[in-house]
Amino acid sequence: MKTSSFKIYLLNKIIQKQKYFILPIALFLAIFCLPQFSSFAYFHLDPQTFTEHVRQYVQINNSEDSKIIKLYVTAYTSTEAETDATPCIAASGYDLCKHNVENVVACNFLPFGTKIKFPDIYPDRVFTVVDRMHERYNSRIDIWMNDRQAAKQFGVKSLKVEILR
Image 1 (cartoon, rainbow, N blue to C red):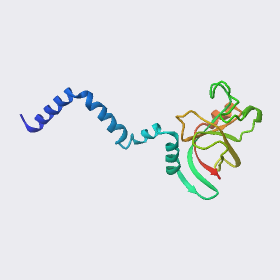
Image 2: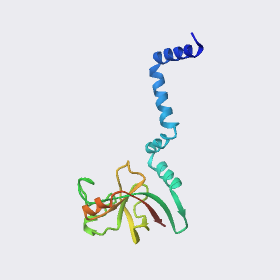
Image 3: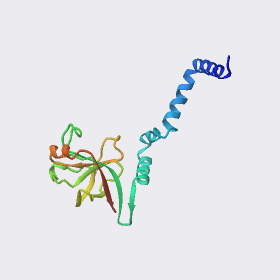
């Protein structure tokens, strides 16, 4: 028997006897050590750590007056299908339907009351963070709109977001 085929034979026997031990190690290596899967680990971090990661790696410009980052931006409306049983009430308690002004956003990584701008599409409009999104969207911002068709037409855009201080 050749040396290489003997090594393959021994490796095969080891794997057959210890397959329940090798599988978790292989999964661990695939998820945390391979570059194409390494970003997967960030989705399981606590929100504060994830927020710091987002702030560190997507930063484009940082001045004393504002910080500009690039993120995916979507739009939503006040319907139960897109929110919860109380679609007009934001997570901060702000009544979206009562105010009916398209100057608020939902965002998980910024505190309530934070002022932001979208210089590429709304250069003169200032938005305020008043709502939250599902936890799987930790690096996205959702603009509130009062027209469902306009929100659908907005789609998903990769935009510069200016966080005002």
